[in-house]
Length: 205
Image (cartoon, rainbow, N blue to C red; front, side):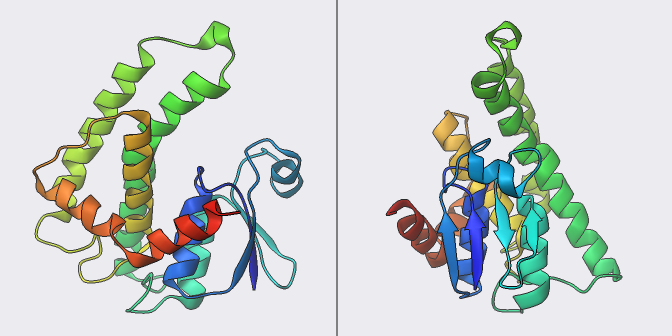
């Protein structure tokens, strides 16, 4: 049994999604960033955090996803190559790309428009972030070309990151092309049953 701290309108949704893909039992505390719960489980006040049944706490969505996929994943659910292999190095490279080039622009825009003090908010940040996000999608299209998922036949951590970011981008009003390979990939990933279950279960509370 795991406990997830974080609201589903944050990166915590990635963790809920992964847990549903892996068919693992979990409880959840829908805490917002910088809330009492968030600060109690992460010194930066960010979410999500994952608490194991042994009382160990893991923060940061990518660290949590890598932990869950490494411990519970297989070729049928949130696959992960073993550490110390060239395949795992490529997997980690793709994951880092997703964080930097797909997640990064969305995070930059949301931080500036929501969390930064008014004296630091820049009207130009939206067009800059949208430009960087579009560049990331162009690279993503090359990475996904001819494949079902980013690791080929296996659904994995970077697919969860990109699938989550697609929903995040839509909620922010960012543009996603409607008729190319990357658009088809994002729709395919977001149609997964585990994502739908995670969203319904966590948003019902």
